Each structure stands twice: as C-alpha cells, then as structure tokens.
Length: 106
Length: 106
DNA sequence: TTCCTTTATCGTATCTTTACGATAAAGATA
DNA sequence: TATCTTTATCGTAAAGATACGATAAAGGAA
Image (cartoon, rainbow over the protein chains, first blue to last red):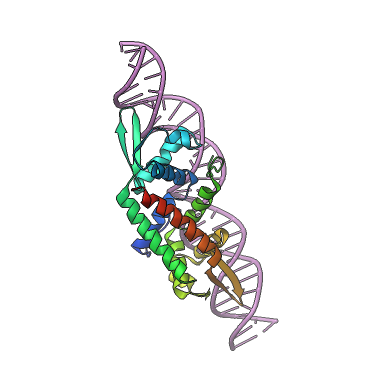
C-alpha cells in the first residue's frame, strides 16, 4: 500500500498525475526551463546550472526522460538533452485542459 | 538528503513544484475534478467517489488543503470542501505560464 | 442519554524519493 | 598508451508518500 493505487481511476487522471509528478521537483522544473530557453539540444552545462551533485542531476534527467518530457542522445563523451516536443505538447494539453476546467468553475 | 533541497532554486520554481506535487496523485486530481464539477462546496460524498479507504481520502484532502488548492469547513457532523479560487488562480497562472514557455520553444 | 453517522487522527507497514560519494564507462586528448 | 573529462550507474542512508485498520471526536437522531 505504499505506491499510488491506480485501480478505479481514469487513465487521463493517472497520466496527468504522472506528468505532474515529473514537475514536482524544483530541479526538474529548472532543467526544463533551461532546455526551453536554449531552444535546442543542450550538451553538458546542465550540471553547472543545477545546484545539486552530478549524480543527483543525472537522476532527475533520467526521470524526465522516463516520463517522456525530454529526449537524450550521446555525443562523444557528453550527453545532450532536449525537450521532447510531442510529449510536451500532450502534457501541456492535458494540464491546460485540466486547469481551464478549474478556472471555469470559480 | 531525502527531502527536496530548495537552496539555490528560484522561489517561483519551488512553488511551481509544490503545486505540481499536489497534482501528482490520481486521487487528488479526481478530487479537484469533482469539486470543480459541483462548482460549489461539497459536503460528504467525496469519500464515495474516490476508490480508496476513508482514512486515505482524508489524508489526500489534508494535503490539498495544506497546499492551499482547496478550503474546508465543518458543517455539523460533515466536512465541506470547495476549491480555493484565489490559490487555484495563482496555481493556474504559474503552470500556464510555464507551459507556454515550453510550447514557445518547440 | 445512548447510539449512529461522518470525518480526522493515530499507529504502522512498505515502497518511493532524494541525495551524495564512489566507481564505471566512453570518448577525447596528450 | 596513459590520462583527463564527462556522464551514468551503484550502493546506501534518511526522509517522504501511500495505504489502511483502529480509534477518537463531534453532531445529529432516537
């Protein structure tokens, strides 16, 4: 009973929660902001921007990749990351729709 | 080193992450959807809608209240909850702005 | 008052998350 | 080849999240 139970919830809500979870840490928000600002694949430099140990940053990148919000490829000795446009659009759409229904009611 | 470190991150990103965390569980998303649909304070019935034990639902409600997304008041033997319009607007604004910058880059 | 209904809280078990040092892996460079 | 740089992974420690049964608390109803 530790993990979030999914039985009985709508797939839409499960996916929305998963995306929100990916955004639920300042480091991951900052990483996405950095990638969006560059508007391109970024090789290196992410570790320098995030105030955490290199191993921890790598872990956060892995999580963002797992959910599908970013893509990564290896370029020589470095790794390059960029925003996964398709998934980000999907995520943005789901969250946006959710927020609009929240607004509408008030 | 277990809790998310906040030192070195922007307050905006910290708050955004906190809001996202509140949305990072299907039950909490479903609760908010239900409250928004009713468009009013809901007394009782939330427990019946969420497929989890009563104690667990109460825990999720507490978390949503802690972050400020909902308000609660006691009405006789029941508790009534409704969406906290002000905070929801703030949250919606922050998330919306974040998502728009994500879109813009791609 | 006594009982019922409803919700909050307590206690607890278990899994997840976060963090970092240490180390491995893979190219680049000398 | 030997070394340096960069990143991923391993190992591990500590705190958080999730779930639920049990119980308390607080009104309402009989």
